[in-house]
Length: 150
Image (cartoon, rainbow, N blue to C red; front, side, top):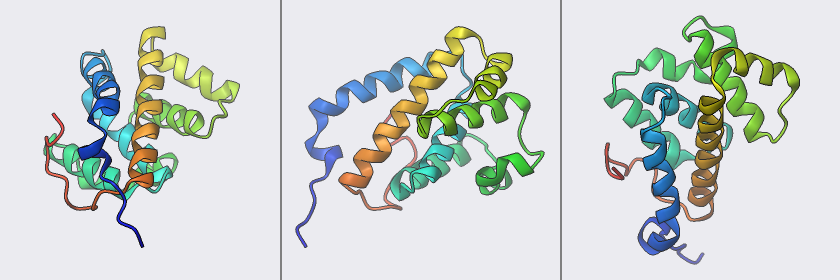
């Protein structure tokens, strides 16, 4: 089997755009902890091992609990998350599936301003791009170091 290229090493010009979006989102009014959980949840949905490793490590380094990370795939059945977080997870799942029902939109609008919902959508679509890049050009899961990409 042919060795696949390392997109993080070879794709720097293309990735500048994604890093730019990440910089924008760091200045967003959305809580960094919420964005990290959304990144982790979408990476679960997309089965991206590298991104799961990355966002698990980053979330833990920022103080997220193991219980909340372990329970994230079953967020509807737990009381570990706030209503705002649950609305974000529902939104992230719907946007990832490219099917946003009215009830999911209404729930999200109860928790997020218009600008926040736009930023949340940008975050969801961005992690989906990262997941697909890392699935097409795999990096070694487990190799990520906290803060490696800024």
